[in-house]
Length: 370
Image 1: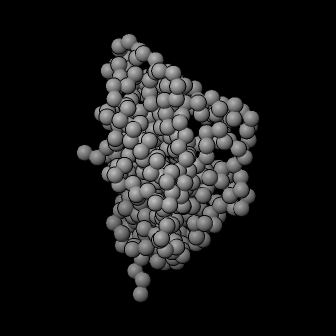
Image 2: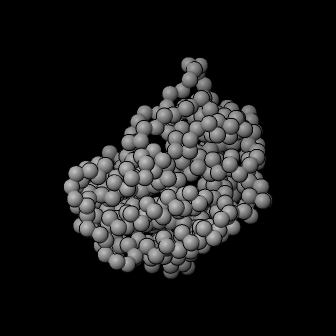
């Protein structure tokens, strides 16, 4: 069975009329145990391994990262937290595991967009000698959502029994999350859990260009001591040697493709943005359950930062699940204003543009062209 098989059935769709599905008609309810069970590499990364990562010969840091991570995985045998793993699913029962040895017990993959950091992080998860239930993999947002669902102490108890925690796209977007995650990781390191994370910025640089930067840097400097930083250089593989993303299609083409594609959704883009405001981001994965394609009409620039950040989360979930996106209106590289692309969240917005562009390319086969 796939490590990332969904833990619940797709959310029901209201209405019985034939035709495309609608994301705006979905209001999924996700139990907390599903959030825990789904902390595994997403379907896109089910089969990746270190052996399937193809380092760029012009970027020696990529080959070096593979070597270091293979050694790191090999060293995660019966880790200091092993005893904790035998305390049950939520960590109750037996005595605490001994504390981890002093020194860094984590790796931090720093690099630009599309250099394969998530591929390497998922490969580390697969290579670590432990049962899937003793390894956790999730984005930074998913980790904070888990704390919101279980509570801080319950999350510590749940994850303390793990051999490894992988955090993809490590971001610190507000002071509350900064304190929350720094406290969580400190407790997990104390329990002997190994850590691995990816980001587009070095640990000591996260928070630059955002509000309360002094508070961010004070917290992050403490966190950075837990990690050995691996710099991964290179260009975005999603655009390496590939054609440019297709121009947006017409409303008629998108609508026709949605009606002709089983399992596709069809939504007006502004209406979808409004719906995302009513669904908690922790449910965006469930929002896409069972979809074979997402079709959007009337794509236009997002109106504000809160809306933009919600769209980033949806783009991540669609990319994780390899759901192609067919759209009319403006191209995806015009979703975010110049002010947004120069601000503190610019890395998230560029990642969303990169991923939506890749998914738009994947959707080309859905359209009948003369």
